[in-house]
Amino acid sequence: MSEPVTPFQAPVGTHDVLGPESAKWEGLIATFADFAYRYGFSLVLTPLFEEVGVFNRGIGEDSDVAKKEMYIFEDRGQRRFALRPEGTASLVRAFVQHQPKTPWKAWYITPAFRYERPQAGRYRQHHQLGVEVLGTDDPAVDVEVIALAWRFYAALGLTRVRLLINSMGHEECRADYVALLREHLASQAVWLCDEHQKSWWENPLRVLDCKKDACINVTIEGPMLPDHLCDDCRDHFQRVVAGLSSLGIASTLDPRLVRGFDYYTRTTFEFVAEALEGAQKSIGGGGRYDRLSEQLGGKPTSGIGFGSGVERLLLALEAEGVADRDLLNRTLDLFVVDTSGEDAATALVDRLRSAGFATDRAYDRRSMKAQMKVADKSGARYAILVGPQEYAAGEVTIRDLRSENFGQAQQTVAQKDIVATISDLLTK
RNA sequence: GUGGGCGUAGCUCAGUUGGUUAGAGCGCCAGGUUGUGGUCCUGGAGGCCGCGGGUUCGACCCCCGUCGCUCACCCCA
Image (cartoon, rainbow, N blue to C red; front, side):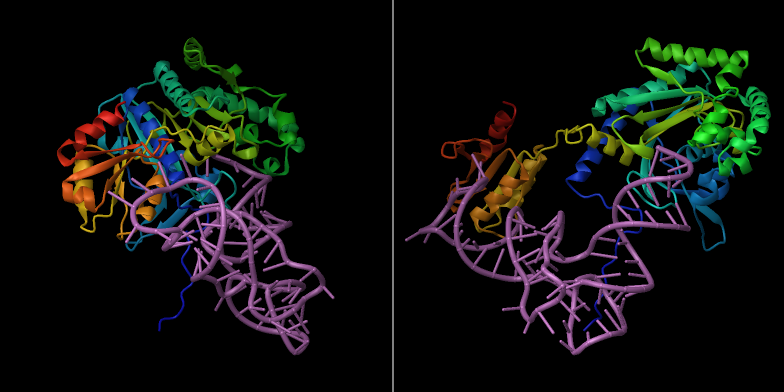
């Protein structure tokens, strides 16, 4: 007798996704893969973990993600790794390492890890999909990346998505702006929220991102980024906005939009699902990162990308009531019911599948009634019946499982005509 | 890291001032006169009532702890 074992559970903040829920994932991922293909992107796979520095350098040592949310571990060789908290840094590391020809257009889907207390729309392991383009700072690419996300959301069925956009300038004009902002904050510091009273000097941009009234009241009076861009950055930003509007994509300028990672330069943007409540409305975002390649040891290379949270997208689809659309239209064609007593199903199913039909069957030699029930619940279009009679005569009965009148919904055909007959029926 | 709610069959949940054999619906299985599924009828399987300790003659119910789920804050996808 072995000791009773308490069943294992998935770790805190992680989830198993089983059918039928997983069908939504399949549809969403397949849709995105198709979009990426149509926009000229190719799939890139990178490791789930990287040296900690890959993420620290890029997203900023003192960002919340780097400070307290990374899943860090040491391997047997005492190397320090982190499970990826987001997609971009790994992709740029791969770019720097392999130096592929540019423009490099990569798409990905990956789990992402953040050590935090789970709640609705926020998990320790969630999933992100996105694209990156390295090797050009053409504003047309900014437009293309944003358009891809925008059209992808629309294809999923989302209608209430808002695009917020901003420009953070390049290194120098941002530095000038930060100096101005600091000056402003210095005179108003006592009015900031508790947290930023302490940290405004070190990271004034974060104050813009603060959602507390205290900080908003202070910054709203102060200088705004878009008003202090250099000529080049202003021109770049204007061309992005103009490009979007030429495609009929409405963007809202949000001068406070700074986002959580330090690597962003120039264009930054965020997609907000209006159907969602509270802090988890952000379903995706991204921006330009023209210095990240250098920060990871590569040559100076412009880049831009966006990432979207799969769980958040699914929540938004649910909230808009479009989560149940079958994006892949995956239904079973056939279900084989075998009561021949001779395992006729094994060969028959193999033949039907080889002919291209999506086919399932029952097991364990159950009664016909039981098998028919399973056939019905499988959602298959037709049941293929092989009883002793059909088996002896070398025939099968094809029964329409969606017909309303049970009596006349079936026909019996010879083995050699099965594939042709079914093809005929299914294409009607 | 802080706080609220909840942990009873596979799922959704009841469970009377603590009283002896813990219930329902759905799902599952088997039948409703031996080849045919959506409805209906009958029967059945399936619960250390999250876990550990305490109070009590007696705990699913009360107390403490613990683990887990969930929601919110922070921040983010």
